[in-house]
Figure 1 (cartoon, rainbow, N blue to C red):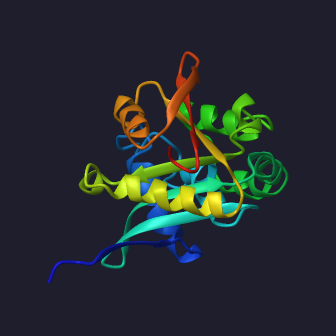
Figure 2 (cartoon, rainbow, N blue to C red):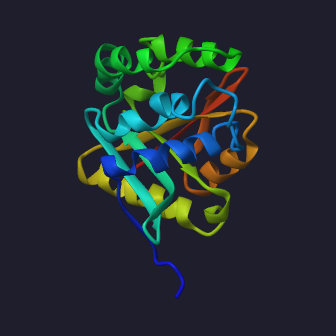
Length: 200
């Protein structure tokens, strides 16, 4: 019998699976294993805090009881950034020992109290991260995750969401355009996308 695949809300019990997916997709969409001092450092910045932070929402694609993808978001980016800086990272940073150039860059990003405060956050106050394992990509699960998240944001009165993706990750950029995001700015390394939570 084929495993049942469904979308459900994430729980703290999903931490290990979410951290694993974050690592396996963390190098511009490819496997980032070995690039960081341990397999949870990347997730401690970009995924796991969204399971417990203020105004956070998280959904997963459950494949027969195992997580194959996720979307995590903060409805209030400013409140999340304050909590991340003052509470989350002060306790998580000591769990990791920076040993590679990638570690140093990640720690620098995590320690920046302005990291998430993009100019677009005034009009698109929520932000998100989404990752799926290769076997789920291209099958519509990413779109369903985005639609599920945006519906909940809209229900909570949040009208806009943004995200930042690597310029090198062209597949992610293409996906974001397909699911209703529009590029609104870029720098040397990244592209910023925005979307109204109610698709036009």
